[in-house]
Length: 239
Image (cartoon, rainbow, N blue to C red):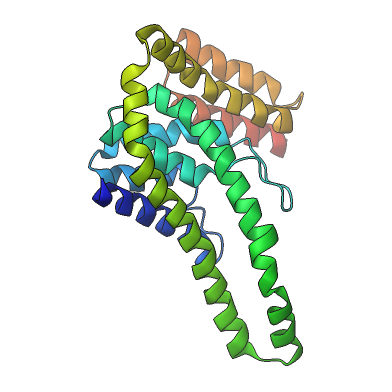
């Protein structure tokens, strides 16, 4: 399990830390994180499936200022880790990812709003003295302190929590596990609903219902429906 914990921590460091090292590169999105985690844990297909499902769940969660609703990277890595290494049902792993993401958000807010503020006077002092070398050292030093902490949390969560989670999963009754699976299957719809509350408009609503008909009655894949709706929505906005 030590090897698995190291891989999980490395995945968080690459996806979350790498996302902010050279500017926001969007590699912290669950779709990418799931793929990277699946590759590291030896089951790329499961990683992509979990990442895609969690992307649908978390894409409607908007972070405003220092208030975070969820931390999707740690949630995706742990959900993928538990599904691949412990054999947790994929949809149950989706359901487990939601409270993990909320817990990760508390860690993120503590680090950003409390711990990183300790360095603020040093940054102001370096800027006041026009000392770019000190600013650079502070930038990378804070990056190391922040994201190695994230990685450490993930490392100990897998190292210390894998066996209890495995024991818990083995003790869960079949009907309760079925309920978790159903709940996990519904969560992507919740993510879409949150996103629709922000994007809904009368001009775009016909294309939403048209896409629903294509998917529900003609069994077209979601990618094809999305491309079709994207084309018609762009046409509607241009006209």
